[in-house]
Image 1: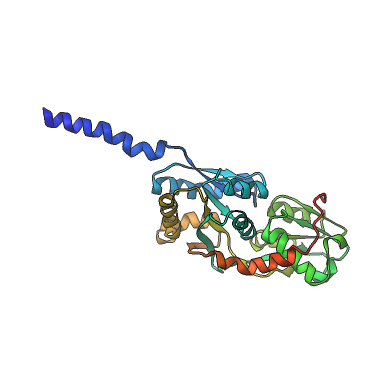
Image 2 (image 1 turned 90 degrees about the horizontal axis):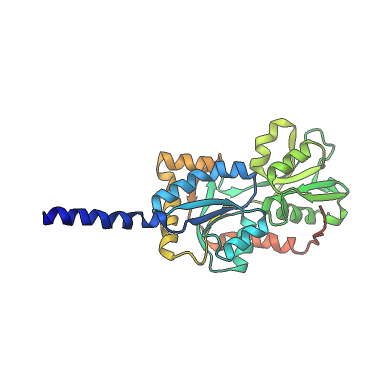
Length: 285
């Protein structure tokens, strides 16, 4: 009788302990709005679900409303985990050097590529031809959707002031569609966005310098033990068929999440130095 009572007491006490992590305050995983919120949820929810199961703590997905908010949410500790574009990571690190790099998303080609695109029937042939023409950008904080394009334009003597107009459209898809619709003469996007629409009447005008890929980062306020658990899951996703499926969902060319160091983003910092010499009109729409 005593043995049976002890067994019952064990399970009564054990169940709350086992479920504690899953009932504690959820960890917040934020993604910057480089695509529509609907598509980002479709891409990242499988990873978020996997993290919840593997670390034994609920993780919830949020899409930031814009790039500055994304950086602020991470650096202020309102988010626990973040997916950051290269430029956003550099900005976030400058603001809070204690954020923790967990890994970098790697595709079949381990570096990111950005392009400046035009319609297939555009008379523009070279980057220098963009003088007095219009360009669509993603966001002031976007690596391939603005900063690297500005640096490349600067090299051929084109300033933003010498364009007929420019605008920030929020995500790469919007930029591609605006160029195809003839609303802008050119657009600056990541190669993946161009590749999806390359058969729809789009061509590359110029190629941007390659940079280190998107980073997974933990907030400086996240417990080290939890951050290490998350890092372990991320770095070993490609070990299983299910994990590789999650990676492919994130991006069609993704093959792994690999270790990364802050210094890997130094080449981008050099481009950013060039970008910082460019005057950006905050009122331009």
